[in-house]
Length: 308
Length: 251
Image 1 (tube, each protein chain N blue to C red):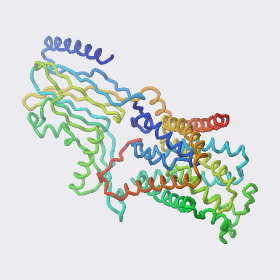
Image 2 (image 1 turned 30 degrees about the vertical axis):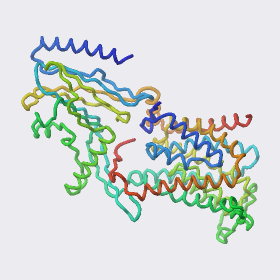
Image 3 (image 1 turned 120 degrees about the vertical axis):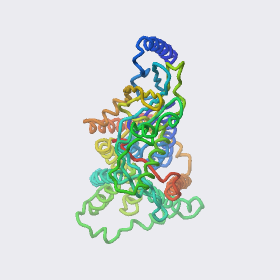
Image 4 (image 1 turned 180 degrees about the vertical axis):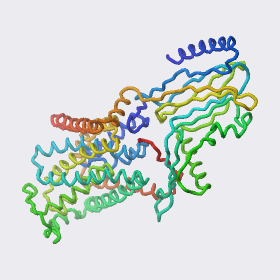
């Protein structure tokens, strides 16, 4: 059954969209990730214009991060002050990102930027996941444990920065500039690539800032909720690129898939999960990289007044 | 359900038209569409619109359908190190967003080249000016790519022989509009050719627009209240997340 997406202005098979949304939701529940990094490229593969894929994915991330944040808030795993500082940085980053997105679209480089961004980030994150979890699967001491045992790496430049703030729940006394900068980068990623940015924020908070792990997830989800909401609002106002029908379809099945995934994840060993996720992430990165390197079947493309 | 009914109606109208044309011999060409509005609804997957008409005697029929004119940016990728990226671009103006020609036999058999050129009949004759300063060969290259890409999107095409004529009086053809058809006002031009000259011509407008919920969503998102649209969107998303967390906490 075909359904016409009013903003994307294409007709797609409704079951394909529901299937994709459910599958990505399942993975996101299984691995505890937002799933945007898989959904956005998949939407582009099936013909959704990149701008609409990114804008819609930002809106859809709001749904999944709200439900995650609420769950963590109930358990008290939330540093509100840290979350607020991260969010402030995130709003600035998202504003810059939406502006940059428009400029690149006008210059004809937005597709390349999105693909290249995905190749770089997914490549790094996928390799890191494999490096961290493969030794565990092969019955060796995982790198993560080694890293955690060493304690957070406090670099001298970090302690030298001004505007120090005390974050009680995170047990930290650091310059506000660090979470602001981190939030900024995440906001940029949300606006330009339609990803939640959790995959970047969580390792930085644990390994670089030295935040307690249980506070990290709740706080990063809190920031992602506000930054994705702000970005979706900005994309809807500036670029008119948020598709309500597509977002709702993805949300409904995504939320259900995520809950099933979360239940399944209890039955699979953590290391195995991370190896699987690492492989999926690397596969997506490789696919996107190949598309950039292989000679395109048609070197010409049309980017006319579509959507304007 | 609807199709046999429209066909019956069309048949009736055609009979009436042919009767009328016998009486009014001085009108060389009459033509109309079975449908003046193509509605893009949520279930839209493309459609056919029937064009029918009558002539006062033998002649060749050419039908040209033009969609609203827009500008198009054609980009060419080049290799930068290992990566293929967009390198050069040419902007063409007044490009019909949809262009299709239908005729009862190949155009070159009965229309002189100069006439095709001046009336912009046939995709190759459509004038698309560009303000970019490039060599003629390069512009021709990019233009050819534009034509090819539009044809791949099913938006450009020339169909020979799908105008069917009956006893040199009646004619009919099906105009195809794919799912990705741009919205706006279309002009359907019908020409009657005799001895290489245009004897008569008629223009029938056709509106293609989004109808129903999809149209409302599009207007909401693109209108003055785009901000409000975004707000509704994130409130829906937020409450979906909240409901999910509330429901699954109890399961």
